[in-house]
Image (cartoon, rainbow, N blue to C red; front, side, top):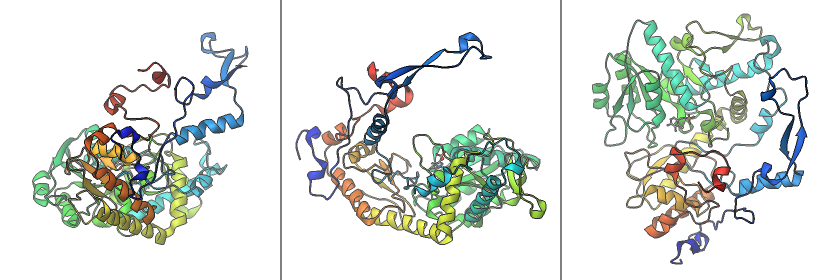
Length: 494
Ligand SMILES: *Cc1c(COP(=O)(O)O)cnc(C)c1O
């Protein structure tokens, strides 16, 4: 390998990794592929004198892109070539379940009857309501829950809705509980959802083995506890073997057990949160069931509850009419109200419905089996220490002396997406890896080879990575703290 990291060739080290160089489309000024509107435009007359809007809010003409179909197709192809996605290669971003999304779900979502106006009367949208009720039923059966709302638009929004339901339930019972308990290995949204709903968050330290510490739990839970929020398997990929005792401790104190469904891919068709004692759960349908995600959505985060909590579900809710004469939307008796417009991100939910219907019970069980097998196989193949186990659908390796963020940047040079880094914090320099069920042994071996190659590299190479991507090392902190969301920000160099 060359001393100059920019000249290193990841494909040439004999390790069996992919050779990789991402496309970099620029114009003669070395600016990235321009916007359509920067390429060629034409003035188009719009509106007329009969607009009811005030003059200062109307325009006579608009400058629109004037491009042929090939120019348009090439533009988007170029952008995709400067990007990396689940259709480029493996995307083992732990806890995110970045599985390949089969194309048939897109066909189903694109059916002309899919996108009906949400204000249409129930009698004119019976088919749509039947699919909604069908998805509520599927999800209820998969999670072991009695009632499901499709409204929340993401897992985090589902958490918030679920905690609002818990709050309304306790208040209806005349109880003022002020605390929600969250393990230290939990996703940041758990802490945020509980706090947003007005609770004090009690952080629960994990035991030596990475699981819930029963003694610590007993000490943390009491008459102020509204709920314990738990991810199972947790973010280390470990199943909470004491889940029945955990449920007993929480229920004995009068609290509710909330299931963060982000890792449901590990249990699909095999075990159900409802049977473990969970009272409320959200489903990250964009993780567990096919829906493209990343880049901010849209996703969907339906929430399931046991029957005692069903009267508190968000409104409107869909149900079969009494007597079986079709479906209707209604407001549950003690509804916490709306948590999103209408019935949620419906075109996302249709894909989940199609995916579940196509796989069926055997297919779902097969998905979780392969997801767990893939994670366990890959864990034995990587050159980094993996402190905990045995795993379900993901494992957390430690980059050790290397900086996990640098490892991640360098892995891009080998044509694979890196794992989630630096979380959970229980593992130093964490590389949280979830291959999902869709990857073949061949792809897992390529991933392992990329891990191994990076594990043997020096700091100079890692510090300067990535070398083979369209955009090189970016200042992530500045990007998060000072987002410039227009393309022009690149042009003026700021
Ligand atoms: C992704 C994730 C969430 C949040 O879900 P979103 O759908 O991204 O809002 C919550 N908990 C865990 C463990 C997650 O991985």
